[in-house]
Image 1 (cartoon, helix red, strand yellow):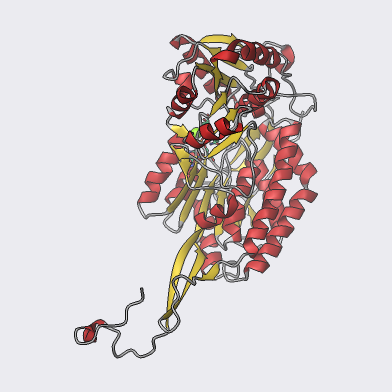
Image 2 (image 1 turned 90 degrees about the horizontal axis):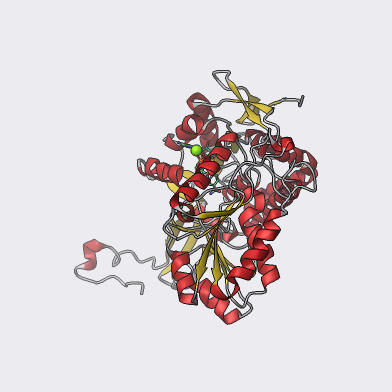
Length: 507
Ligand code: NAI
Ligand code: MG
């Protein structure tokens, strides 16, 4: 019997129960047993959290301190995350079903990403614009200022990294935040709250409220004192939040679904491309927004590639995510497992051929977990639902193409545009294809690699705005232009005497 740890909401620097006193449990997806009991935050809790964030923004030190000071505090948070990595790791594995390797990578990267945002915080957000300024006429300055109170709603697949990608740039720019983690992974965010509570963040700068999407999430998105909504999750909810934001023109950034094309050309290094395609499709059991779920194989290598790919996929080891030898863990929830199995059933019904997997595994030791076998579909056409819809499970659709132009056309025939990849030893050709793909990130002979200095986000229905890189700071700031007059002699400047004497006009 595992122990169930109790958590509290973190509001205005205090750990508190929900106003209504209700709780819910998060579950270990390998055992089905509860691992954490957390407050079920609702509108009343969101109201408290937003009020705290509002006050911290309107009257508090955080937006008013120097960037260097914020940078020092954020750097310290990154270091504290590193120091707490063993605890973060064990909560992540138990609560989300992440394998040891995935979880280790995520914890390490999250702390590192926080260090990167700390560096960004130290950059001046104010710069004189030489091209605008004209001596004797005006001096012109552009300032980037924080937007205000940010609602951040995050998913369960990368529960720590998504928190840091949102908190990092918001805090670097001087905003305050109410963060709502996914109901599947609330303990991860509330563990992070412990670290933030030990830091020098002033009370109310970050508030973390666990709860259900349609309760806490919806109340947060609708709150009139929220200035910006940042969301990662399904395209369906992303659209809802954008409509909600339209009521009072809240700023919005959205990181949504994907159906990324992974294109293998005839001249690819096959052993590397097979490895890369397995990683693209099956890493974290396919629960990645960037997953390479449409695998495009060129005619010349189709048979050989598919043979090797299927053979390797058969040997992916499903097991307890807490064991180092496990390649593929369970999906996050029973609901997600059912959703993925429904997509598979729809694919079969549409006439695609299921070459491998296609069901929950039958091994007795996996029966308590929410597993789906690595699944490969062939005879897929781009108009089938399995080639169009995000599945978020270990399911890949294999498609065939003849020419480079056909590959580009098929790859772009999607409502999504988050990521994609091209595998070829001809660097000119690979670059040519990469340039034509309508997606926010394209890898050449690589997959899933995230560079914290590079903007990350989607074209089309994969989202709006960018995370990471300096672009992330832009998404958390408003731009103000300050014009400082240097003409001095006002008599001939304004409209009332412009009739008799035209004012000097800056170019
Ligand atoms: P979801 O979009 O419903 O949930 C994501 C977050 O939004 C969670 O924190 C949830 O509590 C919150 N939320 C849900 N409804 C809300 C509402 N009405 N107002 C405010 N917040 C709300 O995603 P879900 O149900 O977990 O997964 C469904 C599908 O979404 C997956 O199968 C996958 O295709 C996609 N997804 C994509 C992700 C990505 O990284 N782009 C991450 C998670 C899911
Ligand atoms: Mg949902």
